[in-house]
Amino acid sequence: DQQVKQNSPSLSVQEGRISILNCDYTNSMFDYFLWYKKYPAEGPTFLISISSIKDKNEDGRFTVFLNKSAKHLSLHIVPSQPGDSAVYFCAATRKGAQKLVFGQGTRLTINP
Amino acid sequence: KAGVTQTPRYLIKTRGQQVTLSCSPISGHRSVSWYQQTPGQGLQFLFEYFSETQRNKGNFPGRFSGRQFSNSRSEMNVSTLELGDSALYLCASSLLTVSSYNEQFFGPGTRLTVL
Image 1 (cartoon, rainbow over the protein chains, first blue to last red):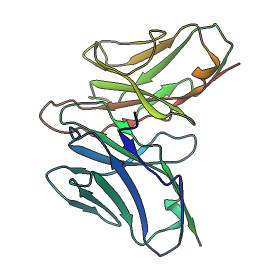
Image 2: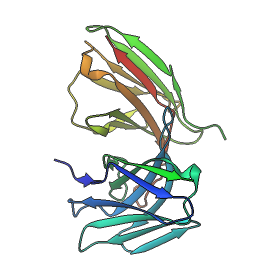
Image 3: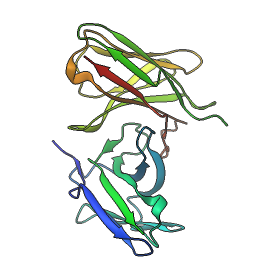
Image 4: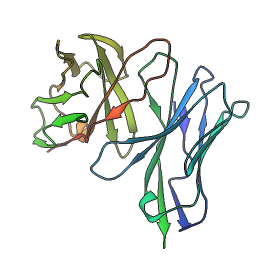
C-alpha cells in the first residue's frame, strides 16, 4: 500500500530552467509534508516542508505547493543549478509523530 | 554542532549471522528513528525510540530490533540475516514535541551487504 507516490522516477532539466517534482498521497490523516534531497552514500538532507494549513511555502529557490483536495504536492526549483542533481524524496507525516512515510524518489539531473 | 553519526559505515555479513548497527544522535535530540532503504521498497520506517522506549514500529519481522540508551544513543540489531536484508540503514534524530512538527536529521547510513 503505497501511501506516498512519486510517479516520475527521473527528470532531466536544463540549467537555469524550472524543475518541478510531483508527489501524491492517499492518506488524508497526513498533515505535514517534507522534501528531502539525497546524494549517493549520504543520508537525506531536509529541504523544505509545508503544513496542511498552508498551500504554499517558499525558501529561496525552493517552493512547495500543496493541493489538499487533490492530495498532491509539488516542489519547484528555480533556477535549477548543477548542484541540484540528486534524488528527491517526498515524505508525509502527522503532527507529533516521528514516522515519515516516503515516496520512491525522483532522480533529478540538471544539464549544463 | 555535530551531526548524526552512524557506525560502521559499511558491513559485510553472511546469511544467518546477526548484526548490530549504532547511531549517535545530534546533541540534545532525544528521539531516534531508523529507516531501511532498498532499491525495491524505497525508504521504509523501522522503529522510533524516545527516552529509551520504543514509541512506534514499522512493518518489519521480529528479527529487527532496537534499543536506546540513557544518553539517547541507539542501536539496531538484525538477527538471522537474509539476503533481502542488504540495504542502507539510516538513522534520524529530532527534538520531540507532541504539539508540533519535528524536522528529522539523517545520518550517512550504514551499508549492509548480506552474502
